Length: 273
Image 1 (spheres, rainbow, N blue to C red):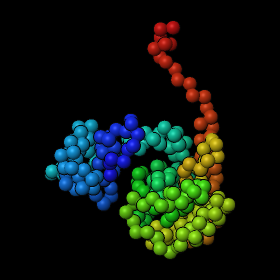
Image 2: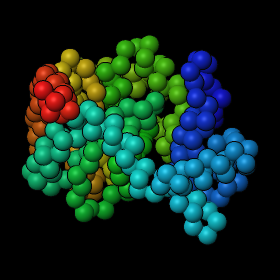
Image 3: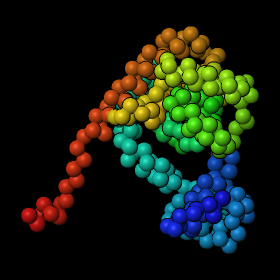
């Protein structure tokens, strides 16, 4: 996977280390040295050095001769989320939405042709797919993904959809490319998206966009229900208005947060002044 950098400042060893971390997923929680080397496209000695370095840094642990990630890797993703200020703003709104609907709510952002969950407040219900922070799903099969895809320009949409999904799920075959484009046009006009058992049987959700201070769609919030318990009519008539209000509140507060003066105080200068 490494070796694709062309710039004079590209650091190949850093890219290879990130490739090693990316090899681990829900289906490969524990991997041998040989498996990591094969998955990352690296020679065994190189993969070994990288794994041992990551272990010394605390991102990887060794168990019975096999390697697995540690919770410390979450700090990499949470640093990104925290830098946006989005999680701190969204958390109380997600919690309030869950309290009013009795259903789980999440926030996701686009990464290639997938969505990646950056925030989630769940309720203990039996849903076909497990979702955690960092979980990725094919964008075109999810309500949040369709909201995010609908905000792209035509050229950007083609480029994004051409990228292979890294979610490890079989592609959805119930819709043609033209039908998807037509649906995204409709979603862009009405401001929300529905995914009715497209991701997995029994999973039904509706999503709305979250915008930054410039009005650009940067994330999507959803409400997820079990199809056997909640009809599409209930999802759209009871839960969607609450979701739209919550997503709008998050967007407004995020815009205010982004517009605040960014003043950094230098304690050393203050002390010496």
